[in-house]
Image (cartoon, rainbow, N blue to C red):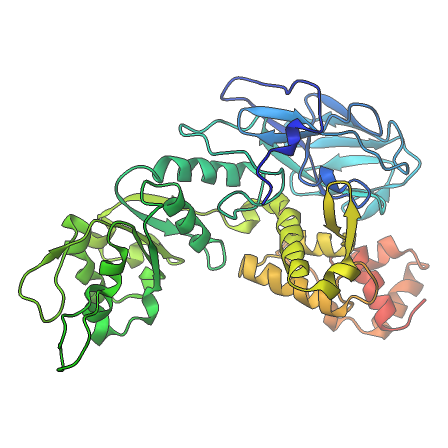
Length: 468
């Protein structure tokens, strides 16, 4: 793992600093830039105006709490020196005007100028994809600042990936909670990284040198919970049985991580009360109680009310993980991380889909796949993203990881219209031909008339049905 912050290496200019409580700015985050991959995750604040182009100073910053590091200039020769002119409008919106040679697309439609809101996509056609969002500039500094000594956009020392304000706020919470006493409850959707967070809490605590013993609580049989947790004496319950320390004995001096604690019935949760209060427990077959010095970290995807109230009260700290929909700008970084991980384990994938750059290997990914990932609700969080990427790897015909033509990509209803997108699998070749005839072959009108997610979906359908 790279143990330095490359934001200080690529930009000799002094970073911009502001006081805590900086106002939010609307701007654009780079979510796809095949010619400038080091800009992935960089933010261009618009306050009150900004320009995007191939100038010495791009205006993009790599944000870390308390400081905005200037990002390197764009190197893509297809982008003009003064390509987009941006202005902040009321309501967090942006005015976007194209002055470059390459066409501008706003939410998939080719235009010369227009207005976007947070959540909308801005594209310099086939060259760069940007997500409109709002962020503080710079990001706020937590009471206990999280370590930022890792490569921008890469995994931190705990394996967490992302540069969004939501993820940096989480890192600040972990830095505060980890060294302080008290049991911790981690809440978050399935697949949102609760196990990584538990590992981070252990690694950043004073117990890091001792073991972190993990167990999925949902797999503990009700009749064996005392034996699993507390162990049993030698020769108990039958002669010849070896002594068993149990999970608590194994975690003594360290951390006991109970995943999916919300799946435990309340009667079984009650077995934890004395342990969490004073570290006291009793092995089966022994008359005297024992004491263990440990911290309990528990995790659940259920609401906190799923826990027995007196068990919930014993968690001094509650850490809530943001779902991916609250940090969509991190999705391309997560996708890159997962693809690099897959390539490290499979030389054939690396040889086909990775490009060597001055900053190391970089996956070649299509804009269509990135847009689909950004629009996908991903109810199973990172697990679903990983599965989607593996399907794309398996079915990409060239050297670019692309979305398969018939991949069903369910999308959330449009936040402003409430109108859901048509499932591409329900669109027939006849319907495509009729829409093309009705709109004189203008694809921008066709995909919108059919209720498709984007022009990329239309292109895949046209290929699928052999329509030129």
